[in-house]
Structures are given as C-alpha cells and as structure tokens.
Image (tube, each protein chain N blue to C red):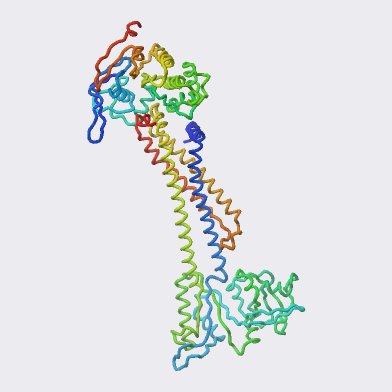
Amino acid sequence: MFDLDRWIEIFQTISKNKLRTILSGFTIAFAILLFTLLFGIGNGLKHTFERDFARDAQNSVYINSGVTTKPYKGLQSGRRVQFRNDDIKFINEKFENDIQYFSPNIQRFNVQAIYKGEQSNYTVRGVYPDYQPLEEAIIEEGRFISALDIKNKAKVIAVGKMVEKDLFGSKGALGKDISLDGISYKVIGVFSDPGGDNDERYIYTPFSTAQSMYRDYDELDYMGLTYNPKLSIDQALAFSGLLEKTLKEKHSVDPRDQGAVRVFNYAEGAKNVQQFMFVINFIIIFIGIGTLIAGIIGISNIMVYIVKERTKELGIRKAIGATPTSIISMIMLESIFITAIAGYSGLMIGIFVLKSLGDSLEKYFILNPSVETYVVVGATIILIIAGTIAGYIPAKRAAQIKPIVALNDE
Amino acid sequence: MIKIEKLHKSYPIGKDSLHVLKGLDLHIKEGEFVSIMGSSGSGKSTLLNIIGLLDTHDSGNYYLNDQLIEKLDEKKAAILRNKFLGFIFQSFNLITYKSALENVALPLYYQGIGRKERNEIAMKYLEKVELADWANHLPSELSGGQKQRVAVARALVTKPKVILADEPTGALDSVTSNAVMDMLEEINAEGMTILVITHEEDIAERTHRIVRLKDGIITSDERTKKSVSV
C-alpha cells in the first residue's frame, strides 16, 4: 500500500540529513560499481578466451599417420604408416553414427600461385565438401568445393580472403583463372575464416584433383572429422579412443605405439577450456560476491551508527505516540530507498564505464567487457534484499529501546 | 484521572536492586494542577515516567482514565500515550531537523491524520502559544522559552487528558519560567489536568497541590494558597 504521507516523512528525513545519506549511499554505490566493473572485466577476459580458442569446430578430430616406434607382429619399428582411400571408406563405415562431417586431406606446401604478374606461395589442400564446416570457413562469394567437383576431378579452387587480397587487390577473385605451379585453376569461391589471417591464406581444391596431381595412387595425408555433436565430451573421448585403436589394428601398429597413428580430439582441449572457464567464472563470482558482502556489511554498519545517532529522535517519536512498527518501517524504507537508488546509480556508472572502455583494453586480453542483463537484475534484487536486512536489524533494535532510555540519551 | 495504589518500582544495579518507589498511593482528579517535588533521587522522575507510560512498574495498581494499566506492550503504550498524554520535557525534546509547525504536527501524524488537516490544527496551537510567526523556523532558530512553548503546543495538539511536565522550567531563566507557568495555568483553567515535576519551590507554589516525595515515599500532600484563592 502506498502511503504518500509516510514517503514525505522519509524524504524529509533523507534530505535534512544529507551527510548521513551521502555516506551510506556512497558505500553501497561504490560496492556495486566495483562489482559491476569486476564482473565486466571478468567477462572481457572470458570473451578473449572464447575468441582465441574458437579457431576450428569445437568437436573436431584430426587423424595423422607417422612412423612406428615399436616392432609389432613381426614388423620392425621405423615403418611409415600411410593412409589410403580405403581408410576413408573403413572409418566411415565403422563409425557412421559417430561422425558428423568427414574429409580426407592432401596438403601441398609452397605452391606458386600467379595471376597476371602478381605471385605468391600458398599451401594447397585437397579436401571434401565437408571440410568447410570442419574448418568453420565462411563462404563470402561463390561456393565451396562440391561433390560433383570431386567426381569430375575439376580444376577449381576456393581461396581465402588474404589470397584474394594478395593476388587480386580489390578487383575480386571470383571466376578468374589462377596458375598453380603452372596449371590453371578457376576460382569458384572466396572464404573467410574465424581463425584469422593464416587460415585465410589457404587454397582449397577437390580431393580427387589434388590426389591425381600431387600423390601416387591413392595416398592421402591426414583426415579430419567432427563427431556427432550429441555426444558428451566423455563419449567423444571414448569414440576417438576406439577410432585410434581400430586404426592401429588395421595398420598392424602396436596399441601402445604413440607415433604411427595419432588421433587428436579437440574434446580434450575443450575439456581443459571448460575447466579453465569454470575456474575463471568461479573467481569472478567469488570476488563479486565478496565485494557485495563488503558493501552490505558497510551499509549495515552505517545503519547501526545512524540508528544510534537518532536514538533520541526515536525516543521523542515514541513518547508522542509512534508505535514500534512505525519506527521499524520508517527506518527500513529509508534504508531500502537509499540502497536501491545508490546501488542503481553505482550499477549505471559501472555499465557506462564498461561501455566507454569498449575494446580499448584488448591488448590486456580484455575484449568487450560487459555485464549481462540477468546479472544487472540479480544484483539489483540482491541490493534491495541487502537494504532490507541492513535496515531491519538496527530498526528492530531501535524499536525495542525504551523511550525513557532514548530520551535520556545525550 | 490518575489513580495509583501501592506502587513499587526498583531498578537492578548489578546483582542488587535499587528500590526507588516504595508503595506510593496517589489520586489526581480531572482538572487538577499538581506538582511533585523532591530532591534528586527521591523517585519523582521515575514516578512521572511510570505515569507517562514511558516505563513500567513492578507491583501495585495504576489506573489512567479509569483504565487499569497492566501487561502493556510497546504498541499499546504508544497508542495510549498518543491518545491520553502530552509530554513537556526539561530539554524540550524537539526534533532538530523539523520546523516548529512540523514538530507540533508530528503526534497527529501518528494518529493518521492527513497532512493538510494536521498542519491546520498544529497552526491553531502555535497561535495559542503565540508562535504563529515562527511556524517555519527550526528549533535551533528559537530561544529556550520559544522552544518550550512549541513543546507545550505539541503536548496539547492531540487534546490529551493529562499534561505531564518534567522540570518544564529547568532550562529557563525566571522570566521565561514565569511565562511558561502562566501558560500552564491558562491551560489548566480550561480544564486540563496537569502534573508538573519540579524541585523549585516558587514553581511548585504556582500549582494548586504539592506532593512531596522523599526516598520513594510521599512525605506530604497539601493544597497551596493558590488553590484556596481559586
């Protein structure tokens, strides 16, 4: 129920006791300001972290081959394991349900690319269409490699934005012909990559085209896939473990051999990232709550002091007919009012500071520091609750003071 | 109006207790102008606090306006104080950040009377104590006598049954003391019951009945010349 008279009484008390109001308001505003800044900066750290670890699809698995380090089944160590096209078929049949995207890869380094006198060297990769989501490449113009390109062994390429910039300047690469080591390819697409400039200096060509161009028979370099995103991290790790074991068996590699067949699952990294994020979150919440508690204790102290200072006034009020309930509600409404207003201004100042900081602290690994709406709403609610508690205890005590004691208080 | 039977009160001091009031009997009728005298420690302030419902008694009976006062919680006491009693204190006890008018109007606020109405009533009582021109001044801008007149207006504003004055002239010089006593006399003449606590003979002489207290016992209770002349 809104009682205008009561609010007039409260506003009068607040405005006639400015120092006291400013003191208590400042404490709470400062606590909330610190809380907001801290939360925002913590979030900024998190944003940087998320960005830097978001190069490829988070559920990627890469399979590489190497040289055996242990003799096995009568085979000597030092043998090179070579993946071939039948491995593609083997994996896809065996793990059909666990795989989302799959692509083999043939890599050729230092391929000289020439367009009308401009030239530079790039890595060329022969891939399947699925490589695009694997790499999280974004097609800016044209299209990526298609299944038809693979079937036709078409001499087409998709180039990164940096390649386009190097060779074509501002003219645009789409539809032009580029010479790669003397053979002409048509540019069918230009892509960007969240991984940054390095990932935009690749040239992609159909897997079949690259294989016939750069490899003998059906050899390939490595395979990349993303696992079914429905798998949990632990399930994903189990899947890649089984994949490694099965491949080692197929290639007669000792199960304990670390070199010959290597399956790298991003889930491992994701697990670490998750744990790290958890720690960062924990620290932010811990310090944030600590700041809030310090603020609450501050306001409680000030309320105790205020009530002490007002003992005589409260005694007079009681002598002329104020009930304990009216004393409690007066002090509490004052407290809630001051905390809510001061806390809200602290919050607003904090958000304003974070907004104006923007990305200027990026070199300190703080990107887009900001607080979420639910944090803002939550902190405001906590504040009002804090104001209530901070006000209630001293108010209750004040209401219990005998008027005669209060009147004698000098 | 006020009836006290075998009233006892003691205060705990450490493990012992100090027996302040030792079985008082006192009857004050409506419209009386009574002073209670005694040196400090005689128990006169304790008596006033009990009568004023600012403190509780240990044993005995206390009737205020024919109502037996017992097992009073803070809330009931507050309501009774607001309804029946008006207080005047030695140190005025005005709220420092409120104007004279607001101080006088405050008891009406606790009666739930609207702002406009209570300011009108308060103004009427300020006129009565001849302070209408000072209505918007803070207590710090008033002289001692003026402050006490504001306090008198505040005590009267709720139309109480009894005015309790604890050393009302204790902080005032003799001229203003007389002015305040003139005012109390006037109020009494209009029918108000007034109980004054004082240790000054000449102040007590201006009331109609003097009750002398010593060591928690009433030693004398007599009419003054003044009451004879009325």
